[in-house]
Amino acid sequence: MVVMESSEAVKFIVEEVGVEDAEVLDVKEGFHNRNFIVKTSSRNLVVREQIGNPLGSKGLENEKIILKFMEHKGLESMPRSVFYSGEEDIHVIEFLEGSEQLVEEIDATEWVEELLNFHKLSFNDYRDFCKKQDYRIGELSTPEKRLKKLKSETENLEVTEFREWLEKEINRVKNNLNFNTSPEPGLAHCDIANSTFTSGNKIYFIDWEFAEFRERPESDLADLFIGENISKQQQDKMIEKYRKLSNRGKGLEKDIHELKKIIYLSRITWGLKQGDKVEFCKKQKEKYEGLF
Image (tube, rainbow, N blue to C red; front, side):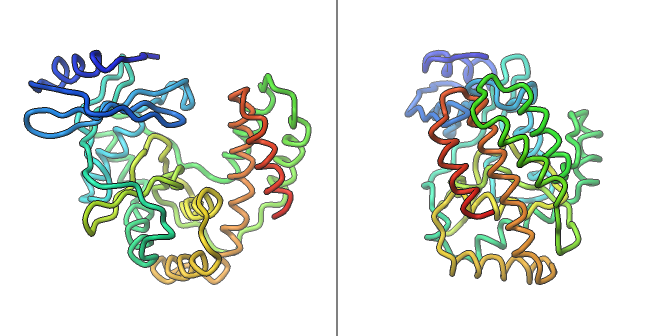
């Protein structure tokens, strides 16, 4: 993993992207990445580097591929990919002028409409695009595959606290999966909570490194309802709008509840893998047991 200083981010922009008069305006750090906001003579850019190794060998390459595909399909609710270095796993994207926004503060109808723009993207189109561009092709994720992966990850945890409980719950959920609507595969953001960005009257979604095609992309709604403090009234409004616009059955709300189980178990597994998130895991476990 590359750990850059501001001067190195400027050097990278100048040498790799070919711009002049670059200057770092700000540095923002999240759970998984560090972002250098760089002013250039023509536009502002963001130099993104991964912190730790949450995505294994995929890194920010996945974000580049997803953004390129969305741009190819004519979507505008995301930043544009500018340059990616596979050797250093550094991704340069355009900087969006605006501010991060809580979904509770945004019109539910507009937000759901933007969400469905990428939820309705075709996995076959994505696969064909990747083949033509010689990009690595991600597989279609299903709830069963996600639970299988979680089970494998729990077996390798160095932190033993919760391990027995976690393994038991993963098996229980896997053996009792029960969905009420037919799957409608599409592109899921997979880290949607706190990833909404507004600029003027437009809604954007940022931080696409975890995005993947899922059999049930409505898992984004489950993720959102867990990760942000959204009122039950707002949740119901969003689910109903999503159901109507996607022609889903009335069992959608129950399916989202089912998907929440996987997301909570994923959060706890992630926390245990970090080694220093025990209190976070305890809180997630309490919420999980309160709901299920």
